[in-house]
Image 1: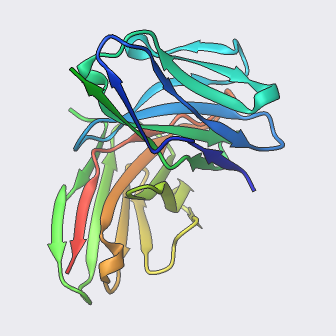
Image 2 (image 1 turned 90 degrees about the horizontal axis):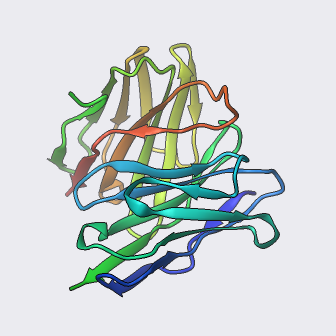
Length: 112
Length: 115
């Protein structure tokens, strides 16, 4: 069965420092992968998506992610964290629209 | 106006009560989904519908039922609510995966508490 692992349930960084949120997937298919963000008391917003085009994907708010098939990873990065980045982040795997599998989420805290 | 709306946004109810959560969308999408979110578990799929006449169980459908009243409306019911159904519920929609992927658009969520 397909699965998505987010290795850190909580990441804490200082404002202005880099962000790394890790995601690994388990699938025999070539996936579509997404990162969604959920701010407190808000719905989910799409940050970026990988759909087998470029392996380095740029998203909104300065985030980007790199698809590495050899490592079955799709880690999310940002060069410099901002206070407004504090939120829950979900890595999501999609099999050609047949089903959508969420990782457990990583809560990002940004310290002043 | 929001493309995907959910009502109510918050609900507190008692064990054994019947509860309906409603979702409406103006995106014109055929596909609609209901998820629940629990801390540390991400979102888990309850039911999904690919069109008005198509309803499918998801990963955790026990204790829930759904109704697709129209393309734009998809309701989730808890026939007899129990405390472990306390969670944040999300509705989502998507278009056909013509490009091979399935971007979903989420409503703001309904926080349900069962006492």
